[in-house]
Length: 370
Image 1 (tube, rainbow, N blue to C red):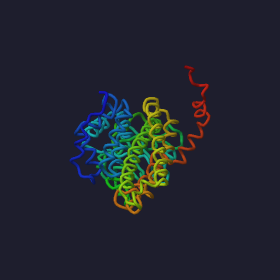
Image 2: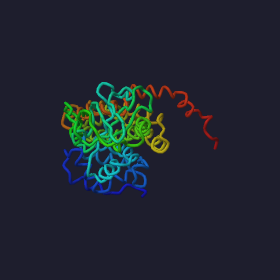
Image 3: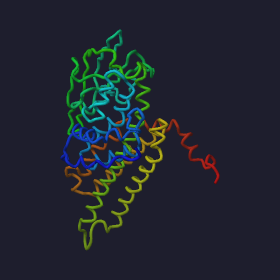
Image 4: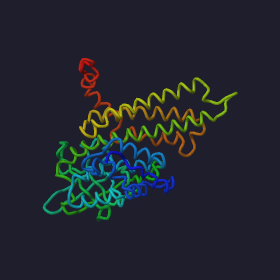
């Protein structure tokens, strides 16, 4: 398999306001989910080009919330599930087929992106485990069949203190509450409480203590997915803005004739092309080499580029930017690019930590002479 199948026409049968689970089901039935992965296997990791194509096709047709619901599962949930056996195996098969949605329950109430401080606990003992804690702002929470829960099995911040557990939403002690937000319609975002949820020990996904290393291995792919989606979102927003500027009368011509307008738009194009180039350059390093530094650099670039492009588009669209799906609304929703997968300030700190290595890569002396 060398290219993603051209079966995206199945999405055209869905309404533009279709929620994430419905889009996911259509993708699975058409065999498009498994094609995002190398050799059709989630364990082999994503192919950046195919992932970018699928996210662009979904973004073109549906609301931001639906794309978010698809993105999180493709980039993180399914690859992590692929590391487990027991109940994780049938859950993975159902998800690949689009028959089920799995929520990624990593972020705790009050700890944000500092996962080493999370309070959700899993007690492992004998043939049984018990999960207790609260997860906040979980995508697909209200539609999930299972939650992939990151929990600590012992005290302390050491990276070996955390474990993945697959928790059925139907298990006694699981309670889901929709999030109080007008944004991200179709994403099923919500909060999940686990009150002494008891399960057979085979619901551990992967080995105990491998939760954070596994998450770190796959968060890079989630950051890459965010960059691929950001490029698609900014491209279509710029295209819509260009159409409006080219049609809006001004004087004897249209707004697009004004040099000031053209220069501002051109600056957005430069920003987008830079982000696209960086995404293409770092894609394989992130997916094949699991380069966390490259993923942090890319995530930081997204957090800076998206607000700039969408903010300028909102201004250029004028009053039209306030319409449903306009740049003003997209700008508010696009705040997720500066928060999800690590806030911009945190990833900038990681980039600074690798400052010398990044400078060394730019040193002409490090490159071969023709």
